[in-house]
Image (cartoon, rainbow, N blue to C red):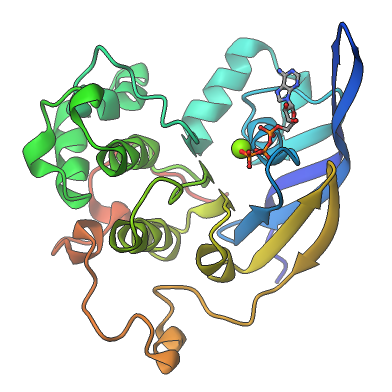
Length: 273
Ligand SMILES: Nc1ncnc2c1ncn2[C@@H]1O[C@H](COP(=O)(O)OP(=O)(O)OP(=O)(O)O)[C@@H](O)[C@H]1O
Ligand SMILES: [Mg+2]
């Protein structure tokens, strides 16, 4: 049975025009991602990875081409309709976190649920922050958190609406090796347990190798697509190489005695229709 794509990118280009001329950042990019699949977008700094992620997530619009996300053609939607699609299906972890400085950690995580008018926002946010190991940082403002802690608050915020697809821009970019592994586990737990598709931009080859497909960009074009031989964190067959076998999971999310999102009481759990 063919699995329908959650994301289809058709001949997308992005061109910026400024005083000094025209800059083609993305040039005729096409690919698609099956529901629940994982992929990494890699390439040198400035090659257009963040730009592509923003287009795929409906945060920005292409100059030409189209993006279809969960059967919605994004380029024909109004700003309001686009915001609704984003809040319903998409989680996004920004390269620079983009936490709201005047809100505490728990309030930042609550934002997407409050936008949906769900009264359980605080309880859900507290639960998620426990799961990402920040139970004792709920009332801290972003400036009072370390880079890795801010990263985990941003992840909790991206998880809270149980997105069908999570875009994460350099999710381990600011983290030490140990915290980086925790974050990788969080991401792949979300994928294996809630079926969330993952699109990760990363310079971390270890992380890229855990995905099912690596899309390599250079000069705004796709120069290769690979299927890494290595299996993902969390896949039982992965235990063969022993790499993640030595220690039990260090992520609070993985360690949670309760099942993940399917029973977590989070709102808006999506089903494939
Ligand atoms: N609003 C803009 N106007 C003009 N040029 C832009 C704009 N946004 C991005 N660019 C240019 O587009 C190119 C790609 O930027 P992008 O942020 O997508 O790169 P990246 O691959 O994510 O790089 P990095 O690995 O450093 O994060 C860069 O050269 C950047 O200067
Ligand atoms: Mg970038």
